Image (cartoon, rainbow, N blue to C red; front, side, top):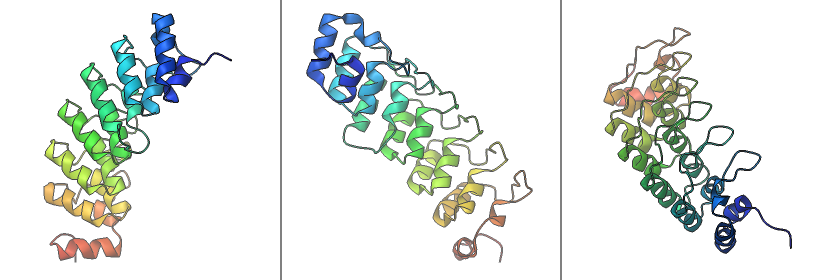
Length: 228
C-alpha cells in the first residue's frame, strides 16, 4: 500500500495514521508540501480538532506560514462555521497563535472570520487581542467587510470592541459607503447611530447617502436619518 503523507492524513481526519507517522518520525510535524503547508495547516482546514490537538502537543509550530503567508489560524476561519471550528481556533490560540499576523494580502484571521460571517469566532479573536482596526492591502478593516456583507451582528460586535467607524479604504470608501452601496439599510442605520459620518466623501466625491437606493433612503428617513 502506498504511503500516505502526513498532510493528507491530517486533512482526511485519519488520526491513527498521523500518530503512526509521528511515532516513526518526530520531525514529520515540520515537513512541508508543495504549498509550503505543514500537517497543522491541513488539520485546521479539514476541521479535525483531535488531529490539531495531537499535532500541537507534538511540537507543530502554530504560527508557521504557507506560500501565501497563511497560518493555521487563518485557515481555521475559512469555510462554514461547522462544529469544531471555534474549538480549533481556541486550541490554536491557547498555543500562542498570533491573532494579528497577516497574509500576503494583509488579511488577519479576524478579517477572514468577518468575511465568512463567523460571529463567535470573531468574538473569540477580539477577546484574545485581535486589532479590529488593522487594514488589509485594500485599506479595508473588519468593519468594511462586515458593512459590505450587511452583517449587522458583526457590525455591532465591532462597535462594542471600539472599531473605528470612518476609516477610508483605498478608494476613500468608509464602511457606511459600502453598506449603502450594497443596500443594507439596517446595517447603515446601526453605523449612523454609532457615529458614522453621513457627509464623508469618497474618492469620487460622493457621500454614503449618494449611493443609497430609494428603499434605503426611505428606511433611514423613517428612523430619523437621511435627506428628505
